[in-house]
Length: 455
Image (cartoon, rainbow, N blue to C red):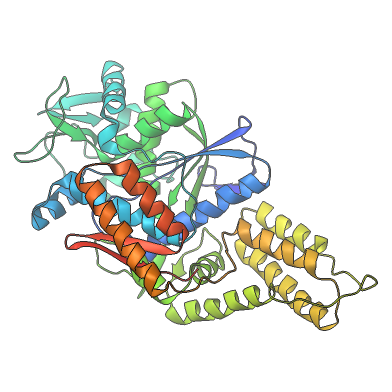
C-alpha cells in the first residue's frame, strides 16, 4: 500500500512502526456550526481509518477539540455565554453531524482545556532547552533555533517574513509563534510559572499527540490549509521537545472544499452547514460526492453534483434489493475480480474515485445477472462490504411515527436536564443512541431541536 507523504512530496510504501497504527487528525475549533468542508476532511480520514482496518491494522485514532481560543472567546462574548458552554454546544453539534454522516468515532477526543498540564510540561521543556522565551507573560517559540523549520511546507525563513502577520514588538523575531498567551481582562485563564494565560493554538495538538500516541506517530492528518503554519509549527515544537525521534512518519493532507471559487470557511461566511446538507441529501450521497474526487484534490460544492450522487446512491442500493430465483445449477456472479480491483485502487494512495467506479461496475453486473436469474448473493454481499469500507450504509430508514416523535421529544428533554446538571456522559449516550436511529439533536440557545436524517 502506498500513501502520499506531504513531507517528502511523493508516494511511499506504508509501513507502520507497530501492529497498531497511530493516527492523529486535527479537529474543529468549536465556535460555530460545522460545514460541509469539515465533512470532507473527516469523511476522508474516516475512510482511511476504515481501509486500514480492512487491511488488518488496528488503528488508535485521536482527534482534538479546540475549546478555547480568540474566536471562541469573541463569539461567546457576543452571545453572552461562557466560552466553555459555547464550545460544548458546538462540539455536541459536531458529534451529531458526524454520527449522521456515518463517521466512526475516534478513540479519544481530548480538549485543549483538559490538557493544560501536558501543555505546560512541554513549554517548560522548550524553555529549558532554549527553544522558547518569555515576554510580557507570554511564551514564544524561537523558529530560528529549529534548523529544519519550513521543510513540510517547503519554505525558508527569508521567504516567509514578508508574509508574516503583523509584527509584535514583544517577539524576538516576526515568525516566532505563541506557545502560551498572557490572559487579558475577562478572559479564561490557567496558572503557570510565567503567569496567567492559556495555550496557543499549535501547542495543544503537540501536547495531545505526544500524550496519547507517543513521541512518534504514524499518520498525522488534516486539511491542506493546516500545512502552514499549524503543522509546520507542530513539527518544530514537538521535535525540539523530544529531540530523539521524528514527530510524524506520514503527513496526509486532504484537499479543500470550495464554493464560488473560494475556500469554504467560517471566517468568510462562505459555507454550507452539514445540517443544511443533511436536510436535503442522504449521508451516502454526501460521501459519494466527496469520495468521487481524489482526497488530495480541491472539490467545488455543487448541489447538482450532490443530486447526481443521490441518484448514484440509489442505484447502489437497488442492486441489493434483487431476489433472483436462481436454481442450484445457475451460474454464480463472481465478485472476486471486482474486490481485487477495489483493493488495488485503495492501495494506491486511497484512490476512492476508482474504487467507486468499481462499485458501480459491480452494480451493473449484479443487475444484469439478476435478469438472467444467476446467483448474485455473494456479489451483493461483496457490494455491501466494499461500500462499507467507504462508509456507505446503502440502506434507507423509515420516517418516525407520531408515537416515535413523542418518545424522541421526551429523550431530548431528558438530555437537556442531564446537561444542565453536567451529567455529560449520560447526555452523550442519549445523543449517540438517537444518532444510531437516524435522529440528529441540535443544541441551540433556545433549547434542543431534532431532525430525522435519511441514511
